Length: 57
Image (tube, rainbow, N blue to C red; front, side, top):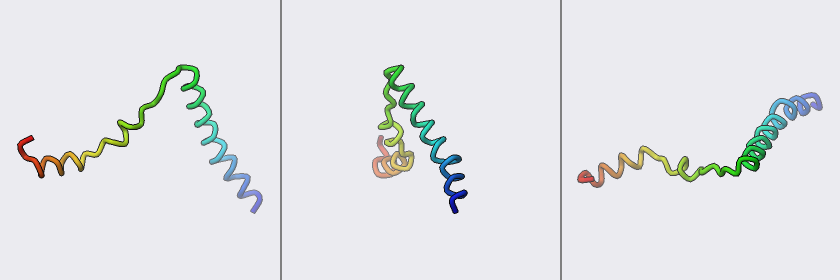
């Protein structure tokens, strides 16, 4: 059981933490902010629904 826990931590948790650290570090050094609002508002299904409701647009 202990070996399984160690394997999960070393193969999953540590790489995720390293990726998050590097993203934070790059963002801190460059001063860039990643805009995730644009990613979450993209919904092609809603565009089709709007076109069906308002065919004039």
